Image (cartoon, rainbow, N blue to C red; front, side, top):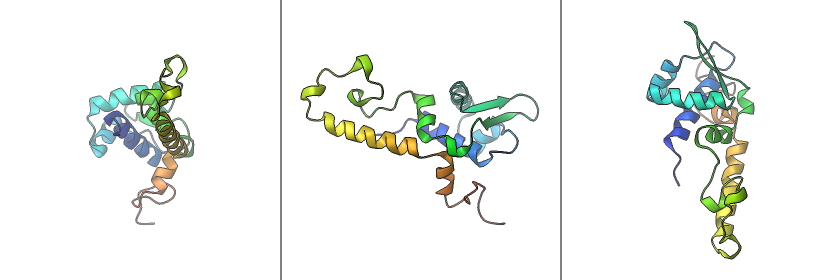
Length: 150
């Protein structure tokens, strides 16, 4: 299983916004350069993140982007769903199965494995916040600032 580049880039960009949370809006160009993400691609991702209510944009010379919520209140699962839709290890274990429920589910030996895997992944993604990510990164102190000095 491999995450999409959309998710990878969005999570990295959102971590940077979390790091700068409480300060001035962060210009998209700077995020793209520091994170080595094509600017046009990041624009598309930020459009989706804004639509999902995770970020807001400010226009003008001092403009840029910022989180709409505290880093403790934004999960990796929120970000993934915003840019890639429902989280699914396979179609029969997808979130919100609803009408698309697998017809083989009742007699499929693999389904319980996929369901446990799905549950575990969603649990981790929905319990890991941007704050947690920064706190677990050696280059950051607990407040989410780049580590090192005082």
